[in-house]
View (tube, helix red, strand yellow):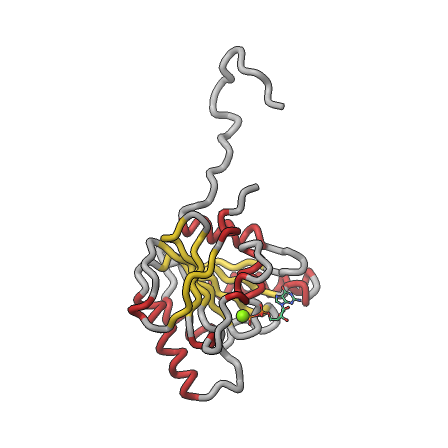
Length: 220
Ligand SMILES: Nc1nc2c(ncn2[C@@H]2O[C@H](COP(=O)(O)OP(=O)(O)O)[C@@H](O)[C@H]2O)c(=O)[nH]1
Ligand SMILES: [Mg+2]
């Protein structure tokens, strides 16, 4: 199968609103530091070091932009991680300004992927982010409950059910299990991103489309 996300290329890293690259569409990735965002981006793009490539000294305060192979107008935006205890107050305020501004003003944002460690979902800052983003039917949010391999199957299913319940009244919200080592949910998440970007492959035509034309050779 072809993976349109696998040719993603690092473009720029910036915090300045006027320097955000021109785009027709983009999907942003957010999450607490250590939630598994870099690992997930690498898994979704089938790259081992895509997210690492863009590391710069100021990386915790900038948004990293990657464009999709062959589509320089479509981006994945890697938002700075948050919730790291040792970050000074001024930096936290900078983060809040950057993220609130980006989430509320970026017109080309088609959807937000929020990564939450399945063992610590819905922290205060995760909820703060949701308030800034204001998910809606035409402003979708998809949550990845990461590191699902750290829990038993039944524990993971329970957290998933609780998360679904917590989101039930919020239109445009969905949630799934995700694990890099177990490759749980990678295809599902990838499909969601591609759908939002308008590059999901069309499903094969249904077999019930009509009678076969006479004389057509059998499929191999
Ligand atoms: N067990 C497990 N560990 C993971 C998973 N995803 C990431 N990690 C580990 O969690 C740590 C933080 O991951 P990273 O992707 O750098 O998180 P980020 O700070 O959100 O970018 C690393 O040690 C990863 O190897 C996962 O799905 N399962
Ligand atoms: Mg990271």
